[in-house]
Length: 201
Image 1: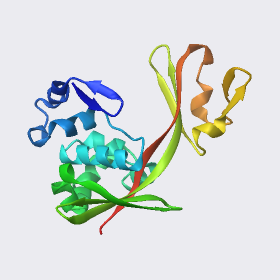
Image 2 (image 1 turned 60 degrees about the vertical axis):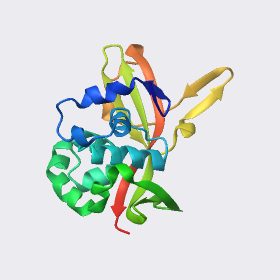
Image 3 (image 1 turned 30 degrees about the horizontal axis):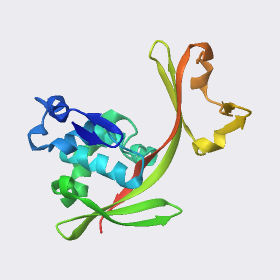
């Protein structure tokens, strides 16, 4: 068994996920696990998840790690990301070659977000500007998922009413109009760290 964040999975599971997929022969076991179970709980964890996908040549895993600003720059949709991806990999240069060996070396916090510098072989290879993204997701009894981004963190939408925890969302969104509260089986309100930009050292 291998422990990854808060998830414990059989070590062979990640290898089975990669069977027959391009690029997986060069994908270390721990990286494959991180691609299968990404962790966006902190700027460093999100960066590791991105580099695991980058090193394993997993386009979907790379796309999931991108923030809305970066997705918009590359066309917003996954299909647009596939078209932009070769140029991005060239732009990232040595970070692609060292993806499985990169370590977070230092962080700089500013109004823009948290800039994490990543080092391999004694040199800084790339900086990832990370930003927190807040979201809510509703899951209905038929498995349908409805989600949207929030401008404020989860705690701003919650209040304790006696012994009840109330979630009060003041959101005008067409997606919510088709949501049937009686069919909702799960609500997730959370924060994830995503990549807003990258830069050369």
